[in-house]
Image (cartoon, rainbow, N blue to C red; front, side):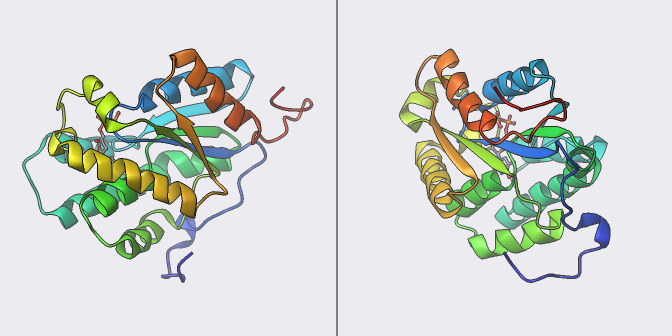
Length: 228
Ligand code: TYD
């Protein structure tokens, strides 16, 4: 998407090993993302797929965990500090977890990734999207998901599920609306990898819609035809 910045080889995009797939689950706070990422990973394992379930911020080891604590429960910080810390955590995550997994043929299901930064720090905090795309390239070697499931819910409905447990959730309804609309704009811009799943229905219905979207994109299994 953006010209190369001389990133070391280890961070550059590589073709996934056979079977490897990178799936992200996104959405504003209280949309049921974490539940559905977990159900999806369970389903993939039941289908015999080698799957890892991970999340942001925090997936990727001790440094990323420490950054999660700072970001979600630390003192207030400048918006750009927050942005850089999300990318520092992501760089650890991509280097130590995501890239090794997809390059060894696993399916990675990740609860939030760069689209969250675009939605929260970009649309939510008004940091220019161009700056976020540049940092993404530096931190991840421009690794984008193969498929992004966007769980969409009116913030008025998701508010019941929120209890201001972290700094982001305490930013109020107007912020949550900007985040939700940001995700919907991103889904339009990157329509080839996004699937929007309304998440107001019963859990089984939402899971079925998520599974339909994923099944359609599964790589062939060596033993036969995948995803049926
Ligand atoms: P978390 O407790 O993991 O909740 P959730 O289940 O909603 O993911 O909190 C993560 C919070 O961090 C969430 O409010 C979204 C926010 N966030 C950003 O603002 N930018 C980002 O890049 C990421 C990954 C998360």
